[in-house]
Length: 297
Image 1 (tube, helix red, strand yellow):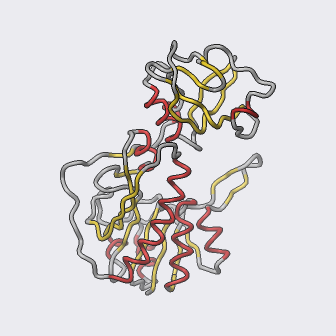
Image 2 (cartoon, rainbow, N blue to C red):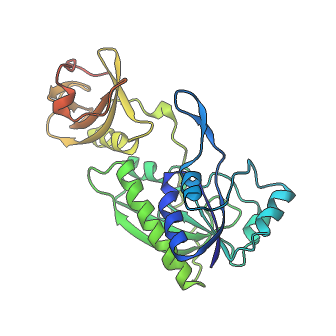
């Protein structure tokens, strides 16, 4: 099958590699290189780097809304476009160009968590499960009918980074399965149960120890690794990257021993933390030469 692939971040890379093994990729679309690192030099996206390593032609238009961009896309004469975390809205002319339309790999059980940050939001909300949907794209935001879906439980201590990797591999497997079975029945999404996964705002990341422990734990795991939940320890900002629920009670923010911290109700144990300018460390190493204050803020 002749495929146009459209994706940008690391989440999309396993899908690109799987498609390359099974089909002919006639073009790759991704976001343009962005300034990164200390020198702020333009750095290609993970998808661009992988596509170039595979010898694939890469395009990174700023927009697809011009007539020229639509004609260039249509000229590829693809059977189908596969879209995963691309980052641009596809206008109707692009959606209609491939013979079988455009398929999106979305990391949630639609209609729950449409939008930009479904993995983060599922963990932060305490969802018991999430999954991947293969969706036939239409003009609305993640509103199209679902062709294939698979659910998976969210594990007790799983972070966004952990779940990201599992769902990325699942998406790669499911899209190969879906393409082999086309045409598949397109099941409309139910009108009830719609939620939106708003983009993560860094203002959400500061830990409020007066919240219940279950909410603090979800926040820490849901924002790991980026932007990283944080608190202040003796005036220094410390990122909290892994946690679990723990026994204990005390005033909110009170350190109960080791890296167990009291919350509004219950307590959490921090199992991975990172000081400014340092690498992430487990509790034993983190506490070596750095004593926690009696109360975190």
